[in-house]
Figure 1 (cartoon, each protein chain N blue to C red):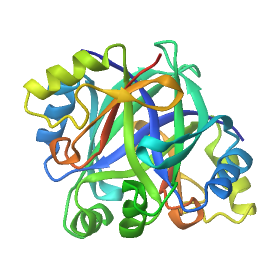
Figure 2: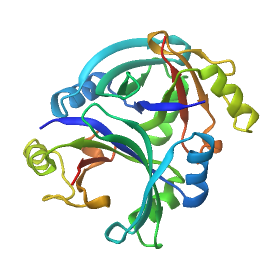
Figure 3: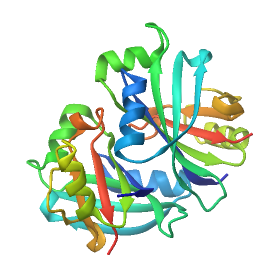
Figure 4: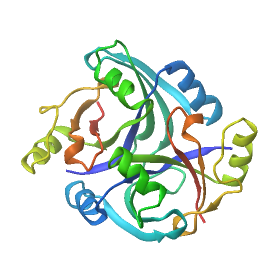
Length: 140
Length: 140
């Protein structure tokens, strides 16, 4: 099991278009993807920040709820906009999920499920990761 | 002005040694630096995640307060452990601070000050960055 990059930082927002405009116009990041992820009740926008030495990218993932009863909607209501999770890239999320589960960390999707852009993802419970909701991503 | 990498993700914690042990033993990241930053009232531990295509690194910066009246201590009391800020790397933080200030974003240190490892840093007000406390870093 090896985590070889910061794959993305997940940031929740009220107004996706305005937040994308901030990161593209003010910070100069490139919008490379948008997608509705119905299974998680979110619309996402992916902004490229840099390339990584495992041959992939580090990105920002901006998220806004698609409907009022999504987990991200409840998060926004409780905490307001801001950083929601961090995601590390690994070449085998299934193996990582099994190994972490055996180490006593609560793995929220085991086996992992489908994330954006056909990736394979799972999440680790924040209480088992010192307060940080942590995602693991294997690219397709 | 160009932000060329995720320089680090700043994570606050109650117990620095235990949190370092989690990220090194469970996730396999390498501890590359520790430092007390008296001006900010924090002790930090830097963990390397990956190399970046601008020739630098993306890291995790674990932070714990050095005393009870530091800003990070108040953050911990209010929100508990978790992601505190995100930091982008730039080759000229002074120019970036000036440009962003002219664009109406509140720059918390202008001119920038000294961060860990002799870097030059400033922070942008989270209310002007869609809820995200944002740091800018120029390496020495």
